[in-house]
Amino acid sequence: MSIRYSEDFKKEVVKAYMAGDRSIHQLAVEFNVAKSSVSKWANEYREECLYTTDTTSESNDAKEIRRLNQLLNEKDKGIAFLKKATAFFAKEID
Image (cartoon, rainbow, N blue to C red; front, top):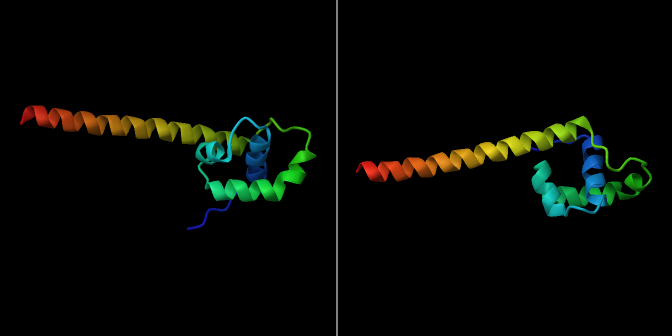
């Protein structure tokens, strides 16, 4: 299944990369996209993004994706903790 991202979303990721404070790997994790996609988008939209005046503003979609990814990561950590606790207490009962 191939996910299609809007051009605005791609440009926001490129702008975040061009801001210089995050690597391609960090952005890939943050936005939940492949590193190769971020790299490809950076090459595709670099010049266009150079000429946009607002490089710090993010689209609402990009903000929402980041928020949901952070929430998902927190939930995953909670599930992993509960699995470990369950295994620990299962051993104690035996």
